[in-house]
Image 1 (cartoon, one colour):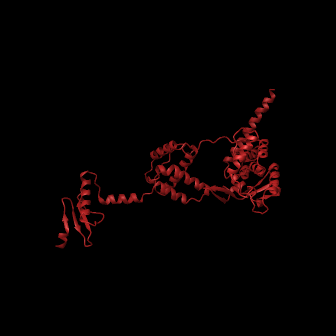
Image 2 (tube, helix red, strand yellow):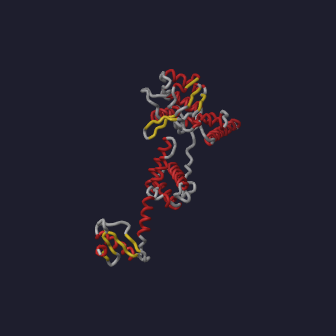
Image 3 (tube, one colour):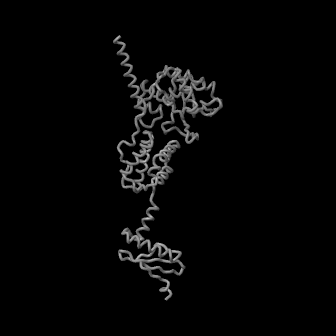
Length: 378
């Protein structure tokens, strides 16, 4: 009898009080199946309130079984968002710190604000096309946008492998291709000498070694006295420094091929030998190129005096510090270096850039032929 009195019927469904003191609600659904609330309630009013909400769903003809709704909620709670998947993906990458920092920067600025909270499994080619249009409108940086697209495409490729997607929705043709950069400034040896001469004396050799040796800036500024041999004619590239979020990180060069020995032509070797005598500290681990205060040389410190030296040398084409490496690579190509020799000298892992320098050298030869032809017309 006690159980009967503990059950109270309503116009829709019934509520009963459990031995625990909590309340349980039940009703018969439109499918004639008997349904019990997915949870118990602390008060009778709460239980009847739940019944009224279920009845209202039936009246509106939007009712689904509480069991199905519970499963849907669980699935929603367990869904993997683009932000969460991408963050975990980057945490698992074994890449150089500078590369990882770039990934995180593109992800935070161009992916998360737009589709970060969407489920990976719900992404479609149409949604990616909309996202691509949105970031191009918001960010007038074609190269960075292309890299962000390539990053998302790579992340979602792994999402396919992990079973979150049936196919990669990144299908925007040409979206991951960065626009062609500006042409490399190709200095002549005479122009290089003039620029070096116009630099502060402490940094003249750095300009010549960067150019004739084809060293990356991070390789150049991590050279130690112990890395220089044979009176300055040989430098051993074993390490490089990068700056990530204001922090200097010293590691191996950009790729395994970046560990190399570079022989320097006479102009650079002579300048380097003199620099070692005048400016480099005595210890084996002393930085070859440092500031007057003994600190590491940074691009910021060299950029302004370098631009002044370019102007003083009468070079009108825009020249960046990084163009010094291009100049050395092109000079090596003009001297007849093969693709493999260029790859070894520059520390490249693929022939793509080496072939680019060879093409640049061929272009200079064509210009020379035109000037020679002009002489014949005089």
